[in-house]
Image (cartoon, rainbow, N blue to C red):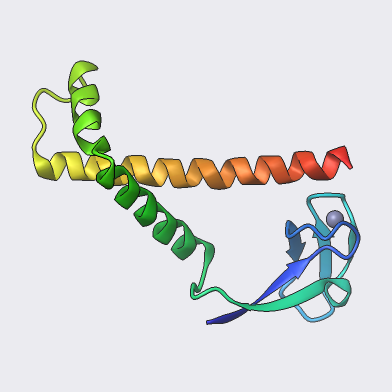
Length: 124
Ligand SMILES: [Zn+2]
């Protein structure tokens, strides 16, 4: 799917909010710029995803594969037993925890990226 991504004309941050209405208002979370939609810098790109939720899902799936390849599942199973979150742990239960952990990591990475992007903009 081809999407259009918008960037702030002032600081080039992708953290812009825009109105869906033509000629609507737009603003930037990074530098506080305000203007209208037409002033935003737009780029067409092919992400292969239809929305941010899908990106998070695909990213979380990649994280899960990485964890599985490195034997993190077994270690995680030991940890949640040690901490008493479960009394016994079977494969199905462990898989659910692995998916939750992978999703948590993916969310944390995205959150951290946003934080660093904000810091970078405020520092310059
Ligand atoms: Zn900006």
